[in-house]
Length: 174
Image (cartoon, rainbow, N blue to C red; front, side, top):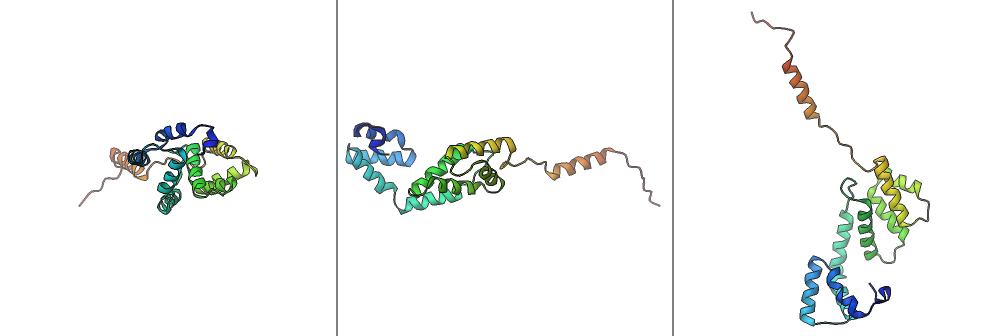
């Protein structure tokens, strides 16, 4: 986040930081403000970089990226895709947008990636990828699992029917 991006003075940017941070970062920011007092945006920016852009942060972000598996039933494609894109662009700021898109789509795998590649001709914007992905998931159910009836319930129902019927053959013991 740069001051030039928003054309806002330092005071407004620093004033909005407590809205941007969540959980641990928000607690850290409040403690930093208590310890050091009020400072301008460049000072806050350097503190944020020293606190959150170290090797441990990179390791944590890489692990979250590798362990993120999309579930089409629970996750909305747009939100999941944008979160993964943010993580990748934070880890590799020099990576091209098309490369980021391909890395994210590999996490879906199989038929969905093939269908998206068939619909989107290179070069394609992220929005086009996301729109085609949502369309494919909703219309063709690619990436969604089918609900199956467990075999145990079928076996129980067959056994229940057998018990209700009278047996045709009566065995006599002599």
